[in-house]
Image 1 (cartoon, one colour):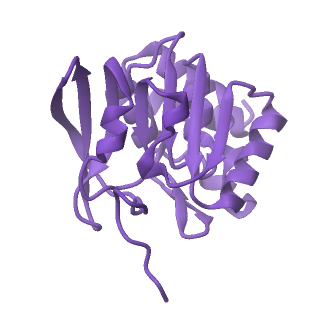
Image 2 (cartoon, one colour):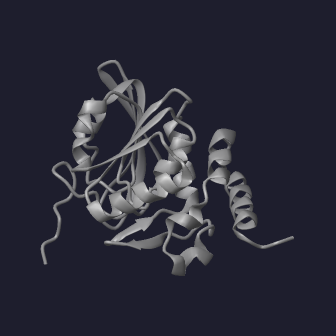
Length: 218
């Protein structure tokens, strides 16, 4: 049997299933998206390693497959969902969400990353993702409300604008905590009330913005 990227991707999916990812739609999405096309060429041999995050430049990373899968499963995205992603990065998480949702709106503060992510989407024929360069901690109010919001960077606390942009019954999945470690936090909105629970430990690059961390000035 050939040991190419398709084989590696299937092995990754089976490992995710064994690690507790039980939503078949999420597993199918992870199986369908060619993760190796979202990482720099020199790191493609590591693209499907379950516990490896990969540097994509600009001080950013593409999260481990198991983290992407866990966050996507926690977001409970349905076929008619409108989803906001905060932190486009390589575009991989947005592509996975796009396989599950009706529309994905993704915000990225680094224009070079946003441009490259858009090129990847176009090359793969993914047409239900819109990308905008802006402060992601503010959300994308013009497209709200959202059935799910997925934040791919660590915040010191849950950004209020994102909670405000959740639809009734919507879920926000965000890493919260100090710079060196966070916990994946799920915020569910029920009318004017919210309910929070912790999913698992995590370690993400910092969420920079008005409702996140300040950008370091060198």
